Amino acid sequence: MTAIRVLVAGAGGKMGREVIKAVTAADGMEVVAAVDVALLGADAGVVAGIGALDVPIEADLIAALQRTRAEVLADFTQPGVVMQNLRLAVPLGTAAVVGTTGLTAEHLHELRRITTDAATPVFIAPNFAIGAVLMMEFAQKAAQYFDYAEVIEFHHEKKLDAPSGTALRTAELMRAAAQGRLADPATPEAGEVSRGLAEGSIRVHAVRLPGMVASQEVIFGGLGQTLTIRHDTINRESFMPGVILAIRKVRSLHGLVVGLEQIM
Image (cartoon, rainbow, N blue to C red; front, side, top):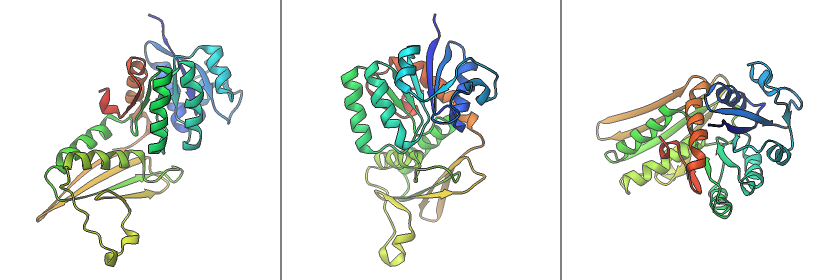
C-alpha cells in the first residue's frame, strides 16, 4: 500500500510543526509538501525539530499541489487564509483536513457546494483532542437534565477567533440535545454587556492569556446544585491522534463533514 501524500499548510506555525512531526512518525503517510508565507526555503523537518525531510517550505499552494500530487491538504493556517486554500485545493481533487477555526456559517455553506461540485471531501474539526470530543458528548447528556448552562473557554493570547470553534460547537450540540430546556437567566438590568456572547440560551465567554494552550469549562446550574465539565489541553501533541485519524479517513468521506465525533 502506498503512503498517503500529505501537504501541510501553515507549516511554520505551532500546530503545523506538530502535524509535520505526527505525519512523519505515522505509518502509511508522508509529508510531501509544506506551505507557509514564513520561513520560505527552510526544510520542513528541520523547522519541526525532527531533522531534514528534503521538503522545503514554499508559498505557492497550487504549484505544490500540482508538483507533488498531494492527496490530503492538512490546513492549520489562519481564518483569513483557509478558505482561499480550500477554494484552490478542492477543485483539484485534493481532500482536506482543516484544523483552522473561525469559519462562519456562510463559509460552511460555500464548502458544501464546493465539495459537492468537485466530489472531493473536506473534514473540519473545531478540536482534534479526543478528550475535548468526550467533553462535548458529556455536555450534551447533561443539557437534557439542567435548566441553565454557560461555557467558558481559555486560550493563548495569540488565538485570533473568539469564542473558539470548540466553544461554539459545544453550545450548538447542547442546544440540540436540550430541545428547548436550557434558559438564559440574563437580563439587561443585570449587566447584559458583560455576560458573554449569547449562543441561543447559552452564554459563551472567551479568555485570552499567555501561558495557556486550550481549556474549556461547561458549567450547568440547577436547583441547589451545579455541574462542571472541564477539559484541559496541556500541549499540542494532544491533537495529533485526532489529526492522524482524520488524514487516514478523509478520502473515504463525502462532502463536508464537521466534528471529530463523526469519524471516531
